[in-house]
Length: 235
Image 1 (cartoon, rainbow, N blue to C red):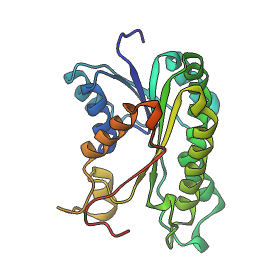
Image 2: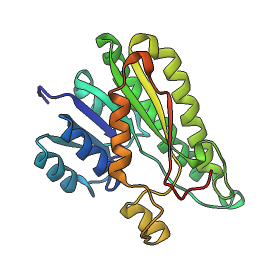
Image 3: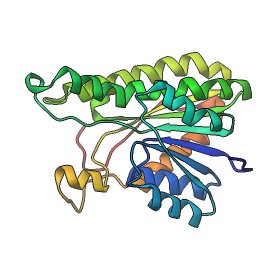
Image 4: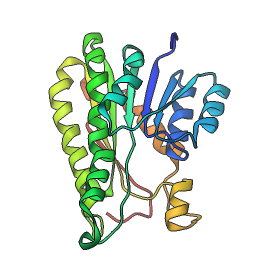
């Protein structure tokens, strides 16, 4: 995909936060590559990004399959200025009822998937001496709640992964940050899981604006971890 615009790779492209990130970065001059297992959001994101002057490239990909990820991402690796990993599998279930297969699936989607993408992307960023990696966390990244054993384990792991990468690749010019989203995002997925609500949820565009701010930070003052929450959230 030849382009004079920088490219942002979004792993876990979907409506809501995914759309907010795509729109915000397209407005800032980026083209967007979206990785997703389904095509549910492709049309909306493509129309959104093109309307804002960018180009959206959708790619079907299962992040838990390293060979598939390499085939999907490698052709774009040299152009990627930003990688955002927001893929996850939310499981709210008593531990006594959680199967080994479910536990493994949650970890693979939320943490292992980030590894499969970044092992392809980081070499090109290192060669260039610049790049930003943003890993999306949640309340469960720092606090494991009842019935969240699988999800919290995956999110705790992703946070540790972010810390390790930041220390290893910061000196090479790669900004790695973990963004903790402490609250429910105002998006269709939230409505389907918890029902509609008028207030108390996080605005996807506001979240995306914070992500863009991280990308624009000077190397002398990088943020490693940013926690965002709505005004109504207790912490």
